[in-house]
Length: 338
Length: 158
Length: 116
Image 1 (cartoon, chains in turn purple, red, brown):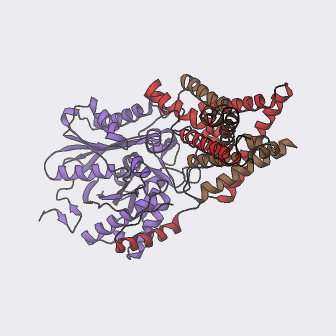
Image 2: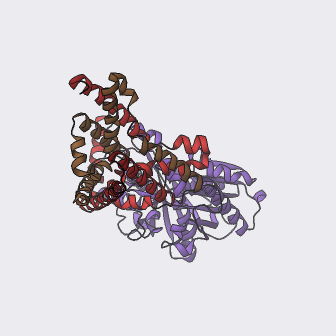
Image 3: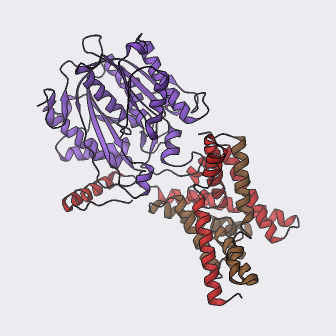
């Protein structure tokens, strides 16, 4: 029996790793949104001075990691590991960003849940004594995701009201061994199980992901014997408005009430009434930037004490969609406490 | 929307229960508004086509040539608006009203051509040009050949 | 009067297409394919030409007209050459629109980069 394991899916950390620094970069549209003033850097346009959108995303992720290390006065040589991922085929944003950074690297993919993957794996490796200093990072880019998953950007297609907009942004955080420095700590994590309720509509990922989010939150609370009000905030990344409403109802059916303390990064990052983003934001970079720019500061400032960060991912590809497959989804939860 | 039913009856029941729960929370497209905007957009593009057609007729061109020139002019204008990054904004409002006219066909050719230039002039721009419009030509040609032959079989060449 | 008819007919086709998009899970690409085939079938039945005579640009601007010109090309060529005209005539009348789309697509791709 693993000594840190609780229940079926949850781990608790004996010496909780500390998140000591964060850095976020957001796209122009996100920069004009409600969290605009909080990002460490806002891009003037989707190209970020590069020749293609893919190059722009690579640069965005690389700059986030470099600026993060600079703010912590660490050189690449003093950093043990980078855990990072993105939405693009073969994880090119993360792999190419690390081409210029001599740091051991493991690439991750769980769609929009990738940042939660990085946080929980990083915390396990730090608490396990394998590494002292880990960077957890993720990125997404509206244009690169749109052309990979959907249509050319200039094609005049109307969006469905359940659709989500891929956030342009990247977030990176530094995890260090507990006790070394002050900061919010990762105290527990719940690893998700792939769910598939048979939904096929790629313009409605919220409905596909809600069962995964609800299952992981339920498992987390039951594994730890906690009530939902243990947390000041349970935040998904990113169910958006449709998936959030369904998740709340699914949990309510299990007598778990999160009506007043659950929100979503994909709703926080945009003004849904004004920004024309339908149900809200999505993308691996959405929860990463919202965490690095906003949630982390709230924890440090003492406005939030106990946060449950639930990354949710739709694990389909254009090929599976065209072959008529339904959408498998996953959610991982990470408890962060000030 | 399409759904995938599990072969396991218990799982299938759970999926169906969930799908009806989810449906309550899924906002529907605003049908009346969308149809009205599609009507205005589709109508306006056809009206522009008629104005161009009458203009070319007024210049003394015959009906066939005027029709072709009208089509070419609309394709050019849609291509220009696509290159300027405006046609997608029109499409977001006009929906089917801007997708169905020949301008929508032009948009579906020019938008991947512009976008995939980054992947090279042969394997990117040229190869991807008909990713969206290709099916229209394929089904149009297949249907034309089938209908033409059927008509010949039924009514002869008359 | 022809302006009003073109506007109303073109608008009605757009609105009907919107109904299909909003009520089904079909994409705009599916919708365009359906309209092209519909235009082609109506041409075979001898109905599209009178429709175009009545509605003018209301009938010739929507992509269904593409089905009409492709099929009309086949029918005319069969008249002159017999069944071999089925392959010879397809692009006879549709040439202008396809050539323009390819040519302008090429030129605009050379001159611009996507705005995003």
